[in-house]
Image (cartoon, rainbow, N blue to C red):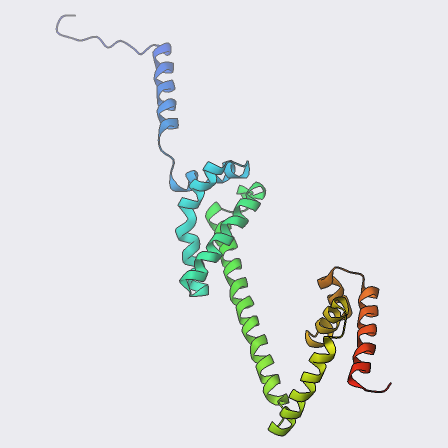
Amino acid sequence: MSGVSSVRPISASRRRRREQRDRVADAAAPLGPTAEVDTLMLAAGRGDEAAFAGLYDQLAPLVHGIVLRAVRDPARSEEVTQEVFVEVWRLAPRYEAGRGSVRSWVATIAHRRAVDRVRSEQSARDRDQRETDRRDLTAPPPDEAVENDLDRQRVRRALGSLTELQRQAVELAYYGGHAYREVAVLLDVAEGTVKTRIRDGLIRLRDELGEGP
């Protein structure tokens, strides 16, 4: 009929080609933030260092912010942030997508690391304070301190008469406050050897200081 355009139906082959082009375009589209992080984590779990570098770039601001809020010190926060990513790299092969997103998983590691650092530093400060308090309580009066100083000088001279091995063991045990087992670990010898060195050293000290048995 003149003046009327005929509409030709799209053939099945043309339809398939169009659908194929659409799928290719979808695959080439950039990933969203979550999908990209997930993809990088899976690759990092297979040992892909480049993927891990990309993961670091994506998540470093998140991790640093979490750590800084807990640690409250920029320099130490940087240290803890690095520790977090070392742990993420080590644990990446164990990551299971079904148990939570990559961001929440990494955020949990960051929070735990930051809290551990805060607790560790607080514990160290508490130990230092207890030691300071103990020294203040046990400090001798001035005249006794002079006498003790003279005694220490005599002991130092007597220690000089010991063999190097005996002196190391005695000093670690009696000046360092270490138990026999700890001295053995520090000197990398058997505990029985440590006991023998300390016993022989103390006998020698007693003789040098002129103290009877």
